Image (cartoon, rainbow, N blue to C red):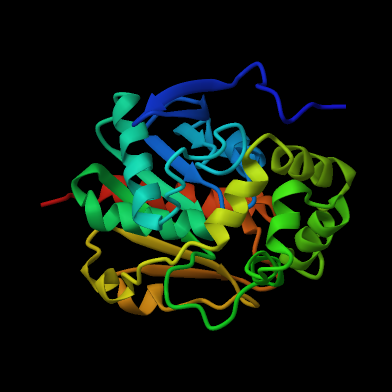
Length: 277
């Protein structure tokens, strides 16, 4: 059985602002950074990376609070802080320009990077991204905000609860939630500090930067599942393209890696073919 809570043979680490960031890097070509969502890890993009690494230099970090990166000492889990860490990571790796794609929270971080560092980005892909004021919160996040339950979740995160959360996150036809996937998520959530970091993240008041989204100038592709709230990225980002998957769930890169990889590759290829001024 895989021990997900330990580094793998292709694991790499780099220090960014005092954080030891775990990441993986594969392939050759233009740089492409992939950002996972909350309560996830860089393995979220395993299959998409296999499909994209033939044409791109694919960089995948474990975001702070998750995976083998783990908690921040300052417990700052605001999205702009995540965006600064991602920008610092790519700078530390010596990559001057890169495309950025993110799922869910990763998409939220990605468009914040696009606002703060547009000169660094060659393209932006938002996959079921978040960032507009939430109409409702997932049950798991609501639970972490319960003052009676919160201390318990810092000490233990039941495997059954993680499995239920994963099954609720995928589309009606998805077959990807198996013992291996649940074991991975449970092992990584159970690493020292990760449960408390997740609770801290869920209880962080996030600044609302949604009014600035129309200022994004980076070429943008919006990928979303029909059953997921599309927010308003395709409407608000000038020139944004959108593709909608008919039956995918929230974890689209794991559920439909071929569809996501093909869309990213085609879009970034068209960005490369378009002269910039």
